[in-house]
Length: 359
Image 1 (tube, rainbow, N blue to C red):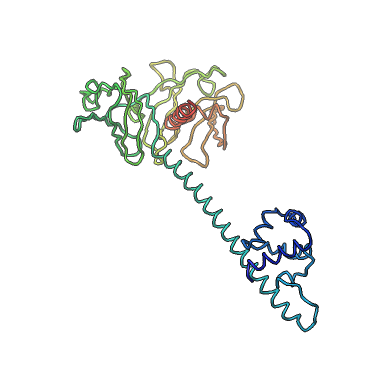
Image 2 (cartoon, one colour):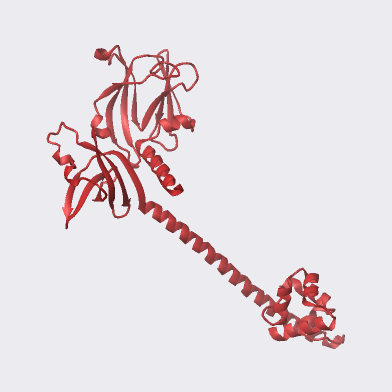
């Protein structure tokens, strides 16, 4: 069916009835622009509009499809039906083509949105603002007149190469190789820099000597220290006032997100006798805190486990019997106390990032 002939037939019939495009459009619940497109041969009406359009023009659907008024003679019925079917198929094919175009347009819009989102995510992963309050300088070098420092990226096996910018005093920087003796810890530096996750290169804007030695979790294996009092219960742990914890072992978490520790918790009697009785040993965990979990006025030991499925464990000791429960969640305050060093660093970076964005 010829689209222009179809449109001209609609226009002639509409004018013959004394209708405007707007009046015809309102009777069909479409816009007058749609009627104008039909009459100019730019598009077909939707298949669902054929019957109401024919009725509005005082035609049968067969007459509308054939683009002419017809006499009602029985012998012409098959011909009329064939013409109507052909016209209906033409309009149906046109509708299908339009719907396909709209589908491709919607798909293209979705793909563009996904591409933009992926680009934003990629940028966030590749370029990240870092603020290390405490780190050592592995080595430093000068290449083609440009000064560089290198720091260790924990749990990756990579060194991060940072070009020295700003007012960094390159000559005064002390590296781990310049310490002197194995027993002496290297100097800790406060660093601020931007870097690329793919190339492990970036630019440092701040490299300040903190005046304190730098050491890692692995360096404190074999040491021990007393636990702090819980201000809510006024004990250190399990109702005791003198509990010490000892680092038995420490090594990188295979996930790269933390270090794993093994601790002994000792009941003591003063500084000289802190290993009076070993109350319990906690193996391969990410951190711990004392908390009155059950509200009995005595502190229990909350532990951050190495398992994602059961991230928390609560140890309680009553009358010499040790019990362990595994809550799926803990309150926000305790969760923050059990965060790993990397999680704390990431949280700080997000705060700094959004703070810079808001500025």
